[in-house]
Image 1 (cartoon, rainbow, N blue to C red):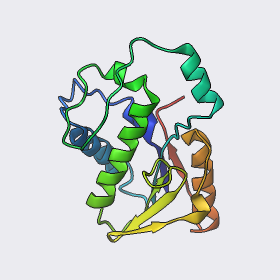
Image 2 (tube, rainbow, N blue to C red):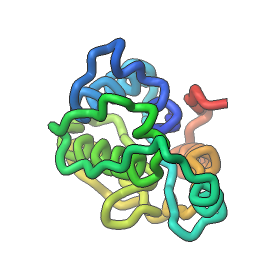
Image 3 (cartoon, rainbow, N blue to C red):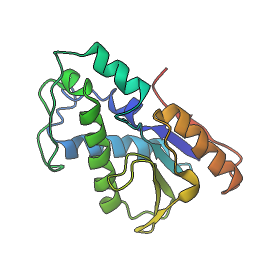
Length: 177
């Protein structure tokens, strides 16, 4: 099984260098990375950060404030990416919208037979997790989790892979320190 930290990978994408123009381009690039790195694995988990309004972490973000943030509304996946992505990343709302757009896109696109788990940040319940397999989306109540950091949530996914699906080998993939 391989478990990915979505935001860790997202922030590392060299958007300008790769000439990515839309959120769909970014989603396809990220999915290409996840697919390539998981080709020898039997299970793929993508774990998302949560951006909770009432968290200590969010209060600290608000306290620090940053005049260099671009707040955006992502209306659809074909929408153009901001020219200055560094200003995009400063907004928790932007990151949450990106996660939700990616999840929605992947739920429509993924038809594979390898179990794909999407942990957190879902539009209808940000603490829920979905399993997609053979075009079917199934809620995973054992992976429902309100921990804000994907780093914490990944541990739940690793435990689930071992205890429920009997995996003996787990790869945690994150470019984040």
